[in-house]
Image 1 (cartoon, rainbow, N blue to C red):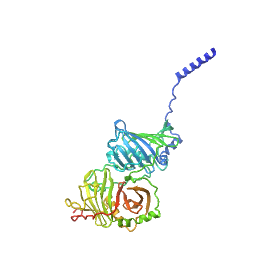
Image 2: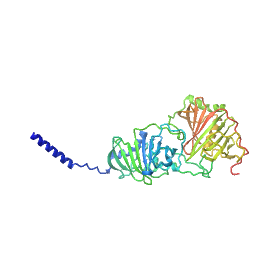
Image 3: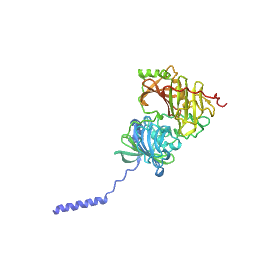
Image 4: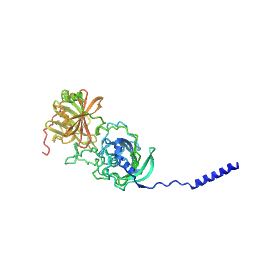
Length: 485
């Protein structure tokens, strides 16, 4: 017993001494990257590109100016689909889909401040090209997000020697990671994502009206691609990087010193569904089969046999401007007659007639979501003749008229995907023309149900068709005068 007591006393004294003298190990000091760490950092963007998609949680700014973003990115398209909230979101609160250079927003001022994962199938309506005020807080962050992927590894010297350092060890998603400090590669800062499609420049007339806008001159805030050479971040960023060169977190400062944190949830990677204005869901493009070739070849004859079609237009042509329209196309008369304008700008609404003589228009005070009056109102300004193909709406309507008179379909043609429209199964067939990319939505009977045009802005405009009998379309009255006379 005496011996055991002595051992216990000695053990207790040793433990007490250990507790009194223990101190946490000093953190490892920051140091230059090892060759293996530098190799992993150089592989980050190509790893993102190969992983295709990732979930997102993004924080932009702090305190009352903070904007929170939740959603996903698909680097292969590329496409981001997010819900925007937080105290600093303001008019930008709601759903957003974006590609490099183009941002589509579905504002929802009544949404709760905290964002949630967007619905996997996005709402059909309410989307518009974001204007400058809505795009400004989010656009720089999306530019950064798209720049985090590239189809090739970084070239030698993309990250200048001596600018990258190892900072610490940490955990992300229960995985060990290294925290590195380094600037973005030089080419990411200058060009953004490599090989990414860019939107066509926005065209406007001499009065400052965007292409497709029939009303008075409007201000066009920039919501497209940033100028070449613009830096994506102020200074270096912190990268949370695992052993397989996968990025889990990025911290940095946007131009102007705004802090931004991007968290990637790499296990959360569903297939994204772009909205119609961005081309719709992805497919597997391929050559047409023999039955598809036959239906495509017979479209003109089928539409002529139908005589005409009721037409509904949706065309996002400028930031904040989505033109709507309703009316008819007659392949018998080789003419179209529609009301065109926006729901919230009555001053810009017009009646338009398309025929072999050109494009005619006159101001209109009615609802552009319903078919125009037949005959048109007699009182008011006379009809004016415009230049054919002056805007994307003109190109789309002129193409629809040619569908019924063509002797053979355009070539080459590619089947983009199968789809559903008004409870009908359709083939979406794409052709490239001198006016841009066109898509024909053809049902199993060989009737054209939608004609889709890629606009100069980079969006897709749709003309939905319901083949059948149409009324006699009015001619411009009184006789039209030439522009400028």
